[in-house]
Image (cartoon, rainbow, N blue to C red; front, side, top):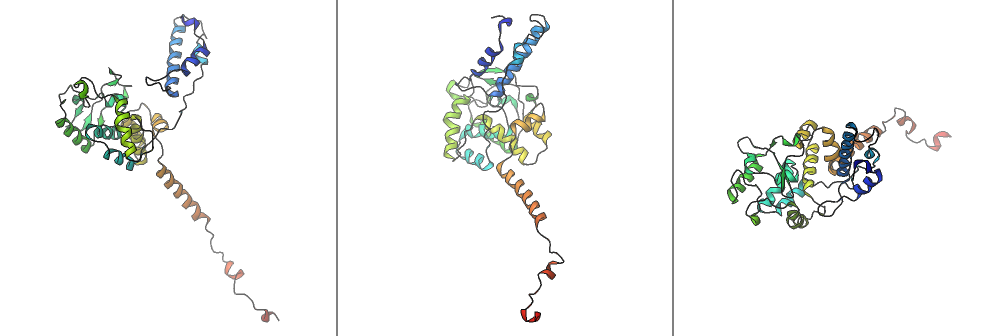
Length: 290
């Protein structure tokens, strides 16, 4: 197929049919990014006169970037309940993810050489998807991630426990294939994490990205500076941090609403009028009027 034969409606139908490896539809935001990338490619073709001016069929392609559903976010009590239901390295996976906000591809691509125990930080330098190792998503993603000392202690204990502790070994190496590859994220989610959430009484559809959304939302709820949250999330701009990854917790919304309602009630309380006591003084007896 030549670039000249690509049609707008055909591209729209193609985008609607895109699916993940597990058969679920791609997110609208991902489809919109694909549409934008295609548009750049066709503009490149126009620039080199492989297409006529104004011949970009992608410019008219309609593709919404609106979310199909609001991402789930865990409350601190739910995180604690979930961790209590997990053992060994699976507990550490969730704890590390929910306290750093790492992407799934970054979490499972960690090697022991990426952990700087002296400076309490992670050096995120690669990602992995379907066992294909590549670079991180963006330049901002390659920034170091600070580690809480208790999480670092749990990492150290796991390093002493696991059979795969060499600098080039995966932190979450799968014993099934003798450490050559890390655990398979989707399998862990289905067989370990979601059943643990059910045992903890959490009636939410949990994915690995749930922990990243939770991390960002809790940072905002704790009153952290937006710039700090952006840096911790390793976003290129704070707009992405606030609009996509951060949600107001229900408790925070209730408390904000209560503060507003309290202020409104205080302003609506009627003050005692200086004429009120005179107008509503003691009643006059009928005998006094005769």
